[in-house]
Length: 360
Image 1 (cartoon, rainbow, N blue to C red):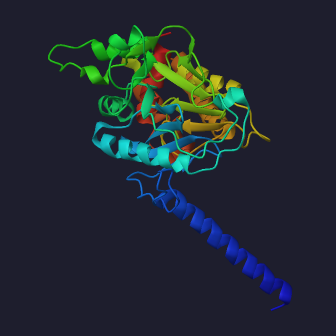
Image 2 (image 1 turned 180 degrees about the vertical axis):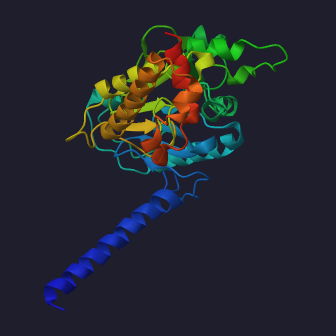
Image 3 (image 1 turned 135 degrees about the vertical axis):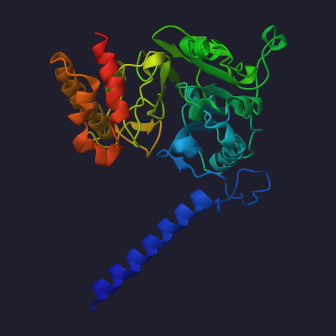
C-alpha cells in the first residue's frame, strides 16, 4: 500500500468517525445542552431531523403511519405544524422540550437587528417560552390528535385587555372549514373536546402571522378542495421550508376525502402551488425544503415527480370516464400499475379520483 493510499484511508476513517459522532449527537443527545449547568441531555423519545442549518426540525412518527410534525424553536417560543396522534402526545411534548435545549446549544451567528430584534449574542439562555403556536394542516387524527395535550402544555403570551379572556395554552390555527367539520356532529357522535378545536381560523386565500416568529415570517396558504376542503400549506419564509400536510406524502398516493370536499384537481393545484413557491438550488435539487405529511424530507424534484404521477393517473381515468367506463372497469384497467410498487395499492386512490371526475 502506498503512502498516499494509507493517508487517504486514515482521512476517510476519520471522516466516517466524525460523521457517526455527529449522527449520534443529533439522535442520542450527546451534546452540551442549553441548560444553565450545561448538563448532557437525555435522548428524546422520538427521532428528529434538523432541516439544514435552520431552527426547524421534523419529527417523523409523531403521528400514526409515520405522520410528520414540524417544529420551529427559538427565543420567541415554539411554533408547530400539526401535533401528531393523541397516543404519542406525551412523547411529542418531551421531544419538543429536548429540541428547545438542543437548539439553544447551537451557537448562533451575529445577524441583523430585524432578524432577532438584537444583533448581540447573549451568553445566558433566556427562559423558554414553550409552545405558543400550532397550525393544523388537515383533519386526519394522526395530524391533529395531539392538539389538546400539546396546546395545553403550551403558553399564551398576551397582555392588556386581551390577557383577561385569552384561552390558556398555545393558539391553534386552521382553516375555518376544519373547525366547522370538527364542530358539525353527526347523530350519536361524541363532541370534539374543546381543547382539540382550533382557536383561530382564517377564511381568505392566505394568512400571515402578524409579526416575525423566531426571526422569520410564517404564511398559511389555503389548498382548496385538495385532500379535503380545509387543507393548509405552511411556509417558513426565512428558513425556506414548506410543510404540506397530506396533499404531498412519500409513502402512498394522496388520500382524498371526497365526503369532506377533496378532489384530485385540488390536489394538483396545491402541488403546483408548492412548486410555485419553492426555488431549487440546481436542476430541481436542493433549495427549498419540503416536509411532507408522511415520509422523508423532500425538495422540488420530489414534489414535481409526485405531481406528474398524479397528473398521469388523473388523465388516464378522465379518458376512461369520457368513454363511459364504470368504476369496476377503470380499476380493472389498472391506471396506477407502474406506480404501485412505489406507492402501494392504488384502488382507494382510483376510487376517489373517479368519483371527483364523474361529478363534472
